[in-house]
Image (cartoon, rainbow, N blue to C red):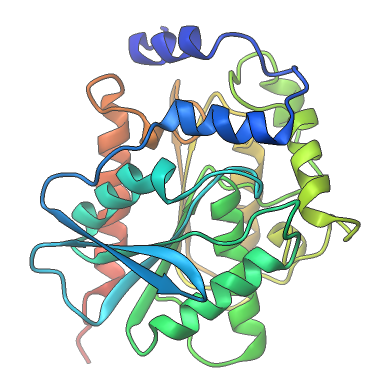
Length: 295
């Protein structure tokens, strides 16, 4: 049975997935789709500098000062901003009861790989000694996983948990779901993602683990929650990263939301009630891993 809210979104998006879209137009399209939502009521916004980049600290009332979620926005590594993801990051802050710090990391092709990764690593370091979780959507979800890999490889502290929303974790676009769901996904195609991957990688092998975490050693990564829609091409990426984490001895949860599309959590809850449900569940996951344990 079709989802009425998702049907409205499909109609608004139209059928432009296969169009060749110049970079500036791609950025403008995402900005127009997302708008510039304010933070939810009850969340204070402070503009800061982090990792020599603009950032926003989104703090709900009563949030502890020593526990922070670093949020990395989506946009295919070439678009997205603090403006486009303020609503989602703020909703996550409310849901987990912690400050969320959203980072305006450098974008490709002006600043290709590993610029975004280096920004995320520096942001993590500058947020310490707070206890830190990392969350992100789409490319930001892939960047969150890559950041955790790099932190593990260098030694030292790790995030307490990861939340990955429709993560893009395989820049080779090799998942079977591109063929299975190619006519269903209203937002993404393997071709469009390959174009963005080429701009981000700038000649780097797409199988490099810090760009495509599914090709890395996933041993020793933090507890991870992955949320994805049943009707998006990146469903395969979510399955693969969770399978890899579990096979490596880690703790990982996969939550597939029926009838949902790419990063449905960013859409208004009045239109897509599942958006609020998923954010609430992700927030509970993060709060549970911040909470002190006995013993």
